[in-house]
Length: 80
Image (cartoon, rainbow, N blue to C red; front, top):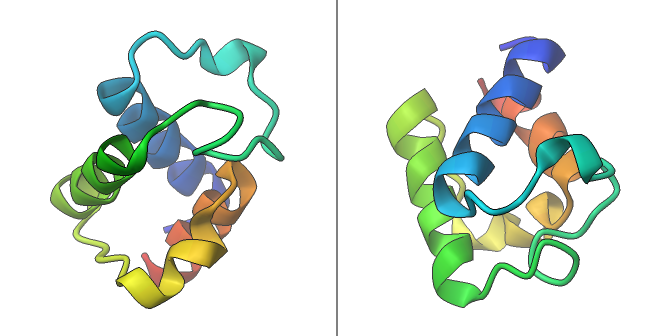
């Protein structure tokens, strides 16, 4: 998966979990839980959505690496 595909996958997953978030107004340095206000359950749903949509499993030990949108995109690009 290249970076553009990873960006689209991340945006799609965030849109499914948090439909009220306008991705056009969000910076890639935004933190998923703090800035996008995803609670623990939303974050887990995001991880599950990514797994379902892309087949990329994000284990709990890697959650700190995907704490930001930029980190999530980089993770998907590296593991996809």
